[in-house]
Image 1 (cartoon, rainbow, N blue to C red):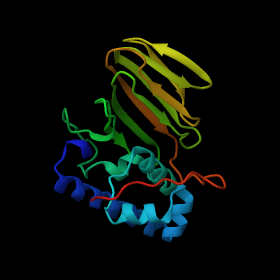
Image 2: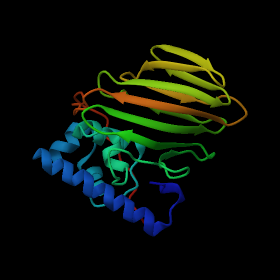
Image 3: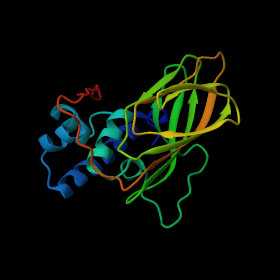
Amino acid sequence: MHYAALTNGETMRLAAELGERVRAARLSHGWTLDRLAAEAGLSRRMLVSVEQGAVNSSLATLLRLSDALGIGLPALVERVRDRPMSITRAGEGAILWRSPGGGRGALVAGFDRPDVVELWEWTLAPGDSHESDAHIPGTRELLQVREGVLTLDAADRTVTLHPGDATAFPGDHPHAYRNRGEHHTSFTLSVFEPGSRGRVPSAGGHVTEETPHA
């Protein structure tokens, strides 16, 4: 799902498909719009816009919805494919994050329930940072740097990783990926969510607003 690389018509079509999947998952739970908005920590207005295909949802919004619905991010964003094997050709990953400097995060493969596994390709331009909220309890992440230098904030530590360096860390706490160097940084990331299930945000949870299509 290449939001940034598609024509306006294609972008709106894919946003509509995402909205239909969110609505179908919500109805399968027997939830109202207000209930899902509360579970995901989003405003009702934002959720209505998502279901109507009126916004290009941010990665943070998609993660909140997939966590709340307990279906895993791949179920929301990947095209329907034959099972048990699926193939993502080079350049076909779902680009779910992009920075003004040219950085991007692409979900290239994944398995859905009961255990959700995601495989990502990330590129950070000089000065880029991506901060991630805590995922559902038990989430674990594996990361290996392919190019450049990556600064990782995770598990109450800040570490610097060079090409070939790898790490495993808990994804159920806030974490961040940063490029503090002068060249692009690229890394491969795998995310494992055991027995994906809904996550109830704390009282007064964060509410996200996004800009609808013009």
